[in-house]
Length: 188
Image (cartoon, rainbow, N blue to C red):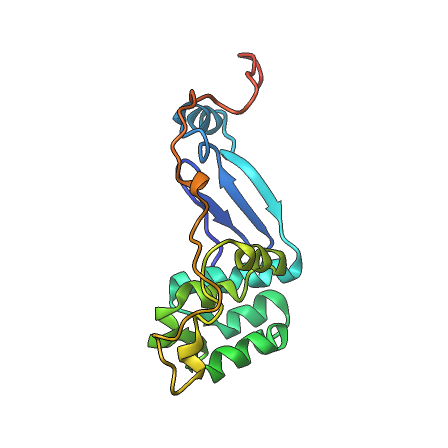
């Protein structure tokens, strides 16, 4: 959960209560990015002010880049312990052997590292979690082997895998264009 500044097109910056994305993430055009820097401005395209809950979740998600969640830093930044902020999530991660305490850090175990995306997603905002769960594809019992000692991987899943919808992967020939409106030369 260390604040950082992203450098380059579309890079991400994070502070304890803001999340920002630089210019060029969509357009991949360096001109606007450089113009903003030349004018002494931060080349930010999108800036989000995070709620306390979202900031705590983002802190946890970013902490995995650095090997785990430092509990003392979490407490110092938010005035509440990690276990008070996310009691059910911490309990689940420990009970399932996905994370463990190493000194003052909650770090992923080998099993947790095999399920990094799922571990990190526990700290996403509830609406993001719902969106991910509602995406097509996947199996209802994808984690059954974690809780069933006699799990048989050959058991037929009652929900067939449908994969991603075809249109996601169809290539349509569109003329590339900058989605933003044209600005006059003296826009700055």
